[in-house]
Image (cartoon, rainbow, N blue to C red):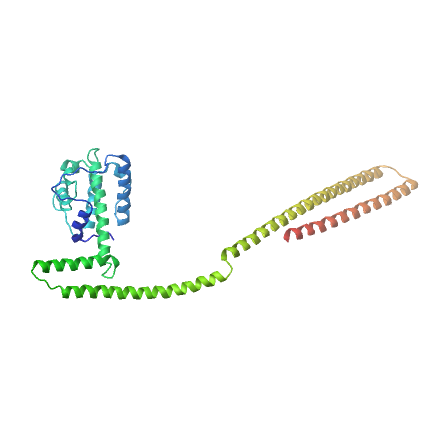
Length: 340
């Protein structure tokens, strides 16, 4: 998009303030200022990247570029202005001629020594300013190309048409002619054609405006989307508060069930310990009985004790089963509440 037409280069150079190659001017830009140099480097890098420069470039590279880097950048920029140009001489001899051809206002400040020591402190600010000017020249040429491509119906070309009329009329006047009817008629016809097109565009815009007005009226009659959105927002906020309260309730209930489960588990463990103790006591008694000679009265007494122990054991077993069943039911209830 930055390939400027060679015919536009002179016009663009003049637009950037050139007063011709013979003028010796002082550069008004503060090219030695670090802030200005940083801005110029950013603009140059931005243009090179957007225009498709095929070599790596960075602010660090452009602090003190090598001659190779500078030549590559200069050749790339000049190719945007004159794509068919071929460098045939030594670079440091050819560049000053090119700059004078471009009517760079400060071309006399760039010497062969500048181009041979590109990265030096005395040369680089001057060369950076020149590259910055070339970027602006390329962008100016691009704008001229865009304007030329707009076509005769663009509003920007009304003054151009009238200027062309004045140029033709003045040429006829210098030639001694005093009849401008044909040129007047051509100009009038041109503006009438433009006016007719504008009138048609106005008619189309009015029709579109009528449609938009109907849509606006329909929106005005209905409830404001903002009001609807605010109401829905209030509802959602209320729902959030309710959900938070419900979650808090479930958390409290879960804690209570956890405490109950812990208590039941402790009771179950105590019952198991008691049962184990009873079994150990029974085994000990059995050993004692086996080691002793017993009479019929002892046998009757031990049978009675055994029956009593069996009853006690059965009672403990029943109690354990009851506690296990209770624990099982509460665990099921807890799982159902957690699944809800």
